[in-house]
Image 1 (cartoon, rainbow, N blue to C red):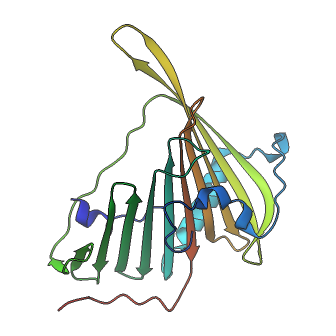
Image 2: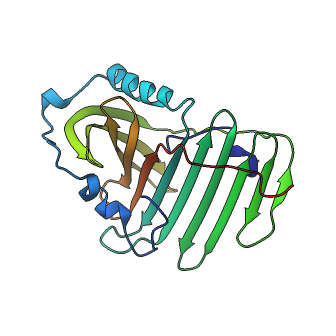
Length: 240
């Protein structure tokens, strides 16, 4: 069930909750604190197994770490205009089993806020300005299925600076061709997803930017994820 899903899995989920009409996506590349060599020639291409090994090691380093992951997702029907909706998800982790998640959604027609806390024994949840509720036990998760012909290219973009430290920048570009059917015809749609990762020289995730679009369309979904490794994070049960 939805209320339990957050503590059963941690996604590879900037800072703070942005205004609906402030595009963190548009400024994501500008706030890295430095420039990156982004020449996309043959020397920048890396093998999938090498790329997955880099991400796997960074994921492994999250184990046992206290950290905060802030994801800001903006949806545009016209990428040259303001976002139509903004969703901010803040996930805090304290090993071995404490988690806190805050999710806020803002659009012209809806504003909502959900906060969940797992203190290692029970789940607590609050919707908007309502009262805290306590739940026992666990729940189930789900999976994703993607159809179509998929090709993915992996690149090492180069070195850059982020928060006054040297970082390695990588990019994965996935192209998916899917067949769509109508009553009278069949046509193809090309989905493009580019994800750029900023990883510290000692192998920690610091930031990622994912842009998803349909070729030939002005629509765009942009997700910016920022990692903070903060030993001062506290997670406690909100009610007895």
